[in-house]
Structures are given as structure tokens and as C-alpha cells.
Image (tube, rainbow, N blue to C red):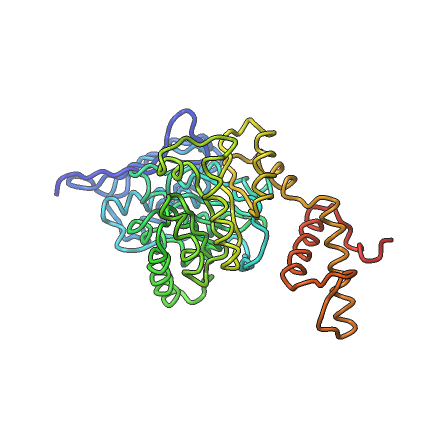
Length: 405
């Protein structure tokens, strides 16, 4: 046969924590010839060689030329890049070379806080490694807009390995898949590896969610030991806004509904502004649809990473509309978002009175909760409990608040 070559990964002066690999097979190539250029060759060169040769043995490959330029990639990254190149050559034999599980993960909770979710480009491992130290509520390994089309096949393998090898430090493990049908390939790669939540982009009709449900059900039957994931559909068009309630109710796996205003404003033929008049209707529709369906409402990202005051104002407005969280595109936005979503002193004091009245009514066996002359409905108590829990999480309220006078 003629010589065939495939590449995967990234190289260049600005690349770090990644590697580029080129594989060549064909006439005249005998044995395994491995050429390595690495910034950490003295310390880890032997380990890299051992890993690559063990992969060749696993995939049953005896004749190949391998060239690698390494910029400090961790083993799970090297595994992903080599596997992607083998797959592009068509010699992976349908196998997957998986890293060992590095950490224990507990399944996410349906009603957990989702104030912040940080987007990480799925083809850039340098962003994965320390993202959790910024303490976002969720980390999104993005396979959609941040990954160029030629890199999507390689990115999904990298994201799969990251789910097994990265310490998320309690952040919800999220992946944004591509639109269908490409999203099916993403699901096949990530569902078996305990992803907590799947962000579904550009949803316009409930049938899109139902199609994903069918695929997820199939994959869960094949992999019964994995997590049953939650969904966060993203509304990004006029049609999606009009159908938001049906979308929110389309699956029991839905826990939140998000809005993406860059695509939405383009769809309705206008420009996005900080004032947000052009999106007030859409955002209000989304909040009402989500709350009517009993799930969370998540606001769009704030795109100016240098404007912290603008971000704070945007979060306070989102909170006033009923949103529960907001997207982040830079770690420095997380703290501002958490502070702005934190309950005020007035909100905390009101919540304390409601919770104490509820607990007193429970102790007395009363079926009705009242505060002064006002009756308190269950949704009001639920909201008050959420306010208390958020205040505790932010350290605004002491764990022994009931004993304080």
C-alpha cells in the first residue's frame, strides 16, 4: 500500500500542556520508529516512550513511524492525541485506550447551585488542568463553538480522557456537545465516563431533546455503571424562545434552561447591548418557562472579561429577573458572579423568619405555616431555604444562625 499519514494535537511556540503527533504507515516502514521532541525529555522522556509503545501493543500495530512534539502534556493528553491520529488512519481497530480513573466522583444533585459555569475549549488541555481552583459551580468542556470543525474528532477523545483524569474539585462535570447529528458521536464518547450534565446547544423544538433522550437511554443500557446525566438545553433563537416551555418539559433529565444571546440577537436581526432591551422579552420568557417546568434558569455569558462593574450590573439584573446563574468565559468572572448572586442582608433576614416559622409549625404538627398575619405557601418556604443555603455556602451566615439573637 502507499504511505498514509495522520496528525493530531497542537504545536507551536504558544502551546503548552499539549502535544502534536504524526503517524505514518505504509510500504517500506518496518517496526516502530519513534522520534520524540519534548521540553521535559530529561525527566519524562522514558515514560512517554513507554506509554506510546504500550499503546502500539494495545492497538496491535507493529509497523509505524511516530513523530511527537511534546510541550508538557500529561499522560491522558498523550493518549488522546495518539488515539485520535490512529483513528484518523483507520487503524484503531475500534478500540479505546482509556486512562485509569484518577479520582472518585459523586453524582451531581438535581437542585445544586449553578450560579457559575466556566467554558473551557475542548481542544485546549492547558485550560483543563487548574480550572477547578477558581471554584466555579460547573466546568464545561466545550465541544461546540470553541472547537474548529477539523479538530472535533480529536477533541471528543481528549474530553473523554479528561473526564477520567482531571480533578474537578466538586465542580459539576459538564460537556457541551455539538448539534445533532454530530452530537451523537460526542454522546457515545462521553456518556460512559460519568459526565454530570450535558449542555445541548441551539435547541428550538422539544423533539431535539427527545432524540437525545433516546440515544442516552441506549448508551446507559450498554454502560449501566455510569451516571445518568442531567441536561441544560440552550435557547439561542426566536423559535427556541417561543417553544421554551415545551423544551423545558421535554425530558426528566432537564435541570436548567440557558439562553445564548449572541446567536439569539443575530437570529432576530439586531445587535446585543449591555442594556439588554433587545433581549428582555426572550430572557423573561426563558425564566418563566424554566420556573413553570420546575427547573433552573441560567443567563448568558458576559463577553467583556475586563469590565467587572458591567458584569456585576448584568448579574444583578439577571437575578432581579429570576435567573439562578450565569455563564463565564474567564475565571476572573466567577467571584463577581458569586458575590452578585449572594443574598442581601434583607433577603437573609426574611428567609430566616420564614424558615423558623416553618420549623415551628412542623414541631407543632400544623398543616399551615404563617408569619404574622400572612400565610406562607410551600414555594415561599422552598425559596427561603435556598436563600439560607446560599448564604451558608458564601459564608455570609453562620451554621448556628438559629441560636443567634
